[in-house]
Length: 250
Ligand code: SAH
Image (tube, rainbow, N blue to C red; front, side, top):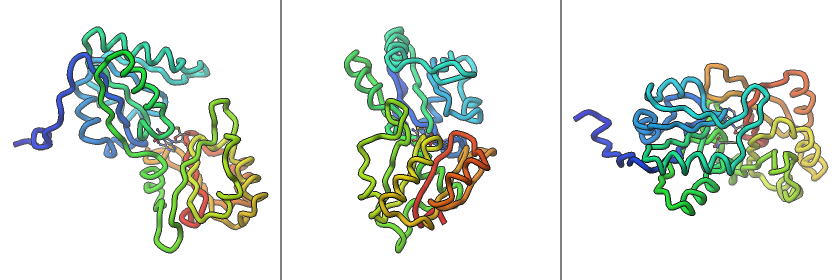
C-alpha cells in the first residue's frame, strides 16, 4: 500500500471547509492532512503568510483566492473572508482555508470556525506547526530547555488596534523565567523592550529575531533586551519575524 492510503486520512467532502495551518514556510513542515487538502481542494483561500513554496503544491485547477495584504492594498475584512468561505462551500466546493503556521495561534481560525458553525457549513480544523515553535527550531532555538525555562508565553505585539496590547502584566512577565515569544512583534519591539526593562528585566537577557523562518530566506538577528532596539534599527530585519526573549534565545 502507498503511504498516503496507509494514513487513512478523512475524506475532504464537497461542500465543506478545512481550516488548515501550512506551517511556517518549509513545505516539509506541512501535515499529511494539509498536503492532502492542497491536492484535493477546489478552492484555496489563503493569506500573505503562506509561502510560495507551498502554493506550488496546490492542485493546478483549483481556484485561488488571496485575502491577505498585497502591494500596499489592505487585506480583506474578516467578515468578507468568512462570507467567501460560506458561499463557496454552499456552492458544493471543497474549500481549503490555508493559513501560515497554526490556524488557532493568532490566526483568527477560531473566528472563522464560529462563522462556519453559524452558517451550518461542515468544517475541520487542521493544526499546523506554529512559527513560535517550529520557526524558532529552524533557528536552532528550543522553546523550552531544562534548567533555562519552565514556561513559554505567546504574545501578540499587535493588538486589534495595531498597538501593543495594554492588558499585559509586564511586572509578571519580567519576573517570570518564561520564554516570551512575540508574534507580529517587530514594529513594537522597542516598546516591548522598554516595558520589560522598566519592569525589572535584565538588559542582558538574550533576544533572537528570526525572519522568514524555515524558508530559504531565513535570517537570524541575535541581541539582548538592552540592545535589541538599536540592533533592529540597524539590521532592519524582514517580516514576518518571530521574536523570542529569554535564555533559550542564546
Ligand atoms: N498562525 C501563525 C501566526 C500568525 S500571526 C502561526 O501559528 O505561526 C503572524 C506572525 O507570525 C508574524 O508577524 C510572525 O511573527 C509570525 N510568523 C509566521 N510565519 C513566520 C515565519 N515563517 N517566520 C517568522 N515569523 C513568522
